[in-house]
Amino acid sequence: MTTLPDSRHFTLERLADGVWAAVHSVGGWAVGNAGIVDLGDVTLLFDTCLTDSAARALERAAVALTGRAPGLVALSHYHNDHVRGAEVFAAATVVASTVTRTLLRGPGHEELASDRSHGVAQLERARAFTRDADPHKRAFARYFVPYWEGLVASAPRASVRLPDVTFDGAVHFHGSRRSATLASYGAAHSGDDAVLVLEEDGVVFCGDLLFNACHPYLADGDPEGWLAALDRVANTGATRFVPGHGSVGTLDDVHALQAHIQGLMATAERFHRGGHELDDLAEPMPDDASADWAFTYPFYGANLRFLVGRMGGDRR
Ligand SMILES: [Zn+2]
Image 1 (cartoon, helix red, strand yellow):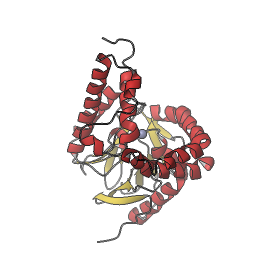
Image 2 (cartoon, helix red, strand yellow; image 1 turned 30 degrees about the vertical axis):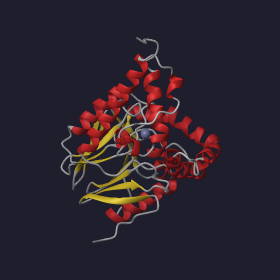
Image 3 (cartoon, rainbow, N blue to C red; image 1 turned 120 degrees about the vertical axis):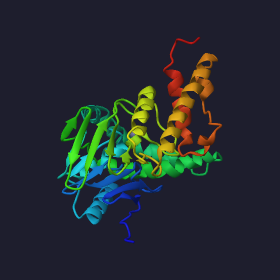
Image 4 (tube, rainbow, N blue to C red; image 1 turned 45 degrees about the vertical axis):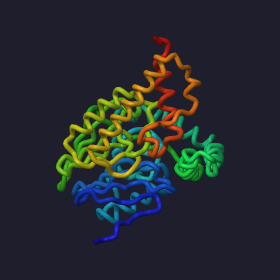
C-alpha cells in the first residue's frame, strides 16, 4: 500500500481509483475539505482550503497522486474556507456558478477585508476560550484558534481569485478516464452551493451542503432551499458523500443533517409561537445527539436565533 502525501493541514482518503478527499485535520489551516479528481488528461480540484499554505499542500498532493498540477479548479461556494487558496492556482481554469462569482466579487471581498481588520482580535477571543469551564467553548477554541491563526498569517497578502468560467445549472467535465458534473443547487447553505458529482464512482463532493457530525451554519443561506438541495444530493444515487466539514459520510449522514435542520426549524417555531424574545435564546444547547457534534458553540444558538429572527412580526 502506497503512503498518501498527507500534510499537517489534511488527511487524504482514497475514494476510487483517481479520486481522493482531502479531509481537514483539526489544528491545520485547510479548515474546509477538498477533493482531487484525476479526469484522465487533466486534474480537477474541488475547493481550495482556507489558506495559501494549505492550497500549496493540496497542489503537492495532486502532483504526487496524479502526476500533474491541477488544470481545473471547481468552487462550491464563496466562503473563505473553500476558496481562499484558489489564488495559488494561477495557471488553472477556475470554474464556479454565476451567482458564486457575483458573491465572490461582493461579500467575498468584504470577508477578506474583515479577516484582515478583525483577525488579530478574533484570534485573541478564540484563545480566551482555551481554558473555559464550558467544554463546548473549549471545543470552539480547538477549531477556531487554528482558523484565525491561518487567517492572521495569510489574509494580509491574500487576494480573491475570481472564477474564469461561470455556469448556470450545471457544467460537465469529460476526461479520458472519467466525467464529472459540477451542479449548482441554488441558495441553500450560502447564496449558491454547487456539488461535484462523480456518477460512475458513486461519489459526491458536497461542499458545505453537508456538515458531517458538525453543526451546520444556516444564517447566510436559505434553510428550505438547503433541505431541497439535500434531497437532490441524496437522489444522486451515490454512496459516499464528502462534506465541507467532518469526515467522509454515507447517505445516513445526509439524512441526519436533513433531520437536524428540520428539528431546528421546529424548535424555532415553538420558540416563536411561545412568544419568546430572541434574548431567551442567548445560548441554548441541543438536548439530542447533536450535542456531541463539533461547532455546537456557537452555531447551534446562532442557527436558532437566525430562524426565530426571520419569523419576524407574525407571532401568533
Ligand atoms: Zn460555507
